[in-house]
Every structure is written in C-alpha cells, then in structure tokens.
Length: 215
Image (cartoon, rainbow, N blue to C red; front, side, top):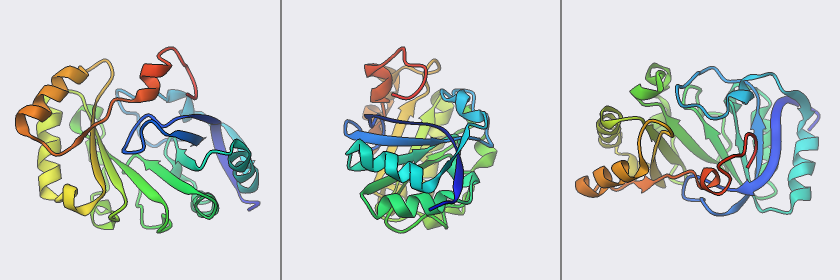
C-alpha cells in the first residue's frame, strides 16, 4: 500500500463511456503515455504528475463514497504499481481499468473490468496494438474503437469479426473521434450495417463541454 504511482489527477464525475456510461464514478488518472494519438483529449496526462501512495489513492476513493472506480491515463499499465492499486480498489468496489491496448493486460486482476481501447489507423498508432490481448480478454471486459473516418469504421468491423469480439467480451463500444467524425454519421453507418456495437458518445464531454481537466 506504500508503493507509489505518478498521478495526473483524481476526481468524481459521471462515467462518460462504455456500458457504465451515466453512472457516478471516481476517477484516478495516472500520468504518462507511450502513444500520441491524433485525437487525444487528455494531453496534460503526458506530464509526470506527482507521486502518490496507493494507500492515499484508496483513501480518496473511499472518501468519495462512490461505488464505481476507474483507473485511466495516460496509460496506467506503464507503471508497475498499477496492479497493486487495482487489487486494492477491487477489494472495496467495482473497478474499471481503461488502457490504450499497447501493454499486456495479463497482470490485470481477475475481478477488475478492463476497457481495452483498440487503436484504429486514424489514431496514428494502430501499430501499437498488442494483439495478444485479444486472447486475454475476459467475458466481463469491454473493447472500444475511436473512429476518425469511414476507413477506420471498416477496419474496426474487420477486427470485430476477426477476433469474434461480440462473443469474447461484454460489450463492443464505438465512438466518433471529436473533431474528425460526427456522431450522426457514425450512427447512420452502424444502423445501415446492423452492426452489434454500442455507440459511445462521451457523456462527460456533452455535460461539461468546456472542462479542461477532470469531469
């Protein structure tokens, strides 16, 4: 519990994505990322942040009195103590991990729900996907595609089919990259193809469009 992590911020908000969208959630955003996606909206998390002990982060979560916690980034799995944090949080409540898909999820505790971001070509970092993670997904886990254009959409459909993602995990989420693709156009494509995915609209960005951090 005295292990330390580099932390960008902690805050209470509404979960904006995944099948948990709309629920109150306590967020722990860790610092540092190995990718630089074109549409990244948390570039401030690239910076080192400050060192915090696992015990202090768990105490903040408990003080929030919110049952749902998420560890996000940056990229949380770049820090070895993240597993300890996830284990301690999951012992106290439902816990989510959002990861960019470039690091192995093999160390994620079984009782933690992984939300795996599969980087599409439009991100500029599709080469960073660790495809071995497809075999490591648990039935409770979810995947997420951020789509910049029709090419990304068609690519995502191929990946969903190739890895049988609708059968492998709890939910397949697909959202438009802000500033690159409209939600309406993506929704039209999904309906036209009868694609069994969940439209991911980043509720927090709709509720707090001018927020620069947190929220």
